[in-house]
Image (cartoon, rainbow, N blue to C red; front, side):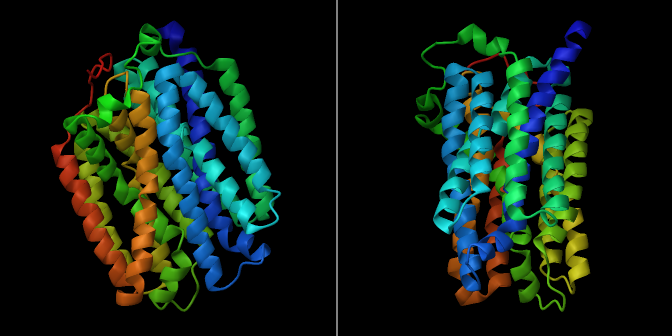
Length: 403
């Protein structure tokens, strides 16, 4: 095993750096949203409307890409999926730096979303199958931690760089990761044993039966609170600052910096603690309850400083993302693992579409804060109930198939 350690480390690095640029891109849009749309002539209320529209298009692209790249990963290999996703993402982001109107911007956000969709799930699947089970949790923790540093990087430099340079930087980093993956990644032995078999990536095994489909929906519900928080309280922080009556305006970059810092720390600790406790579910349950309490406190924040400080604590609680994505990959057999592990994070992200649309529909009737609270009750209740029903997966042997 010792002789394989460098190969393991390189594989983890190649997967983790892809997730770094994945979260960099998702976050950088929120940071440069106002400036980029203003530069393209979209101002006032239209800036918020187009901001939601572009964000939703990116998430829809990720939803589509999640299922597509998952199927590619199960049918043709985890390595091929990882190489193709980063190539599409990089090209789309470099092109994004040269858009001249909002329609081009929208198309490229969709294509970038499709490309980004395969990063996390395909990487987690490959690493989960390559590493021994006693190292699996540590490998996925490393991927999650380094990936979340991408969000922190976007928060730190996004407010300083011109928005076109910010997108170009993301695309350039993606091309470097592409070269690294071509050079160092090896295919999963579990996949190679069954390459070409008819049930590899067979969606009928997942969605054609009630129990696997329900298990898939329950896994998704556990992750939705993470993106409910990020989609609303980070991307639309300026709007929440106004609704709460803050004297000083909130900037997305400032809020994101503190949330991403907490998220990076929390992601490392959630993965490590789940290994020490021999349980994914216990860590996720504690974080979900803490996150719900912190959201209530945030919506009563008296000033800008309190809001930003609470976002650090919220980021720490959101760190259960590491345990969540690991549990997702462990819930299903190797013939569906890439499909599930790649689609689940993107379905979770895409759930921000109905969340933001519901918020838009409810806001005129109730106001922003009551509408947010109502949605939060639904999201957290479903998440906790679903977690209760899911099985513990820590230490489970992954060399099995769904039949």
